[in-house]
Amino acid sequence: MRTVVFDLDGTLADTSADLICAANACFAARGLGDLLHRTDDALIAFHGGRAMLQAGYSRHGWQGAQLEDAIAQDYAALLQYYDANICQHTTLYPGAYAAVQTLRDTGYKTAICTNKPEGLARTLVDQLGIADLFDALIGADTLPTRKPDPQPYIAAVQGAGGSVQQSFLIGDTDTDRRTAAAVDVPSVLVTFGPTGQDILRLAPDAALHSYAQLPALTAQLLGTPAHGK
Image (tube, rainbow, N blue to C red):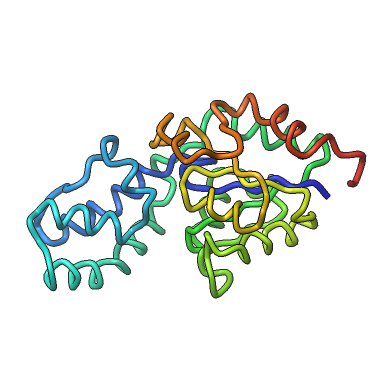
């Protein structure tokens, strides 16, 4: 069956503010205040918890062993804070819900393949009210490997009951583009995430400027499914 696979952070939802808040909570616990800005540092947020900690502590002048030790000590605390405050500022990108629902109504399977830990990803999609829109969810720790290794993507498609040969990946990073390339499926990168139009420098197979475009783009890439196919 034809399947559309979505990344989560920066693709379906803007999670940057809650991620930044989790990092700033770690900095505040050390008496350093907010070292990251919720808007200006959105792109750093999508590189992960360790990247946020490194950026913040580096700005404070920490380096070498001091920096590495702080990241190692604070990463678990960051995840704990984020888990408890995962959907305070997070929102779906405009039109995402309606677009995914339209795909499903048309007969496509849908799945999420994210480098967010699976438990956090499931908590977030539940709180966003979109869990029922997806047939499968594969997180960073669901399998021994994560994107850009092809196995999580393959597992997401198969978990949705789909065919890898009739699928494509929507994401917002080079990791997503490389994942699609590893599986030999089309890559679609969004331009409404924090990278904006600069994402086009990665030369994806297609760009998504608005979720309103997704149903037509999906039909173009995969064709229109007959019922149940």
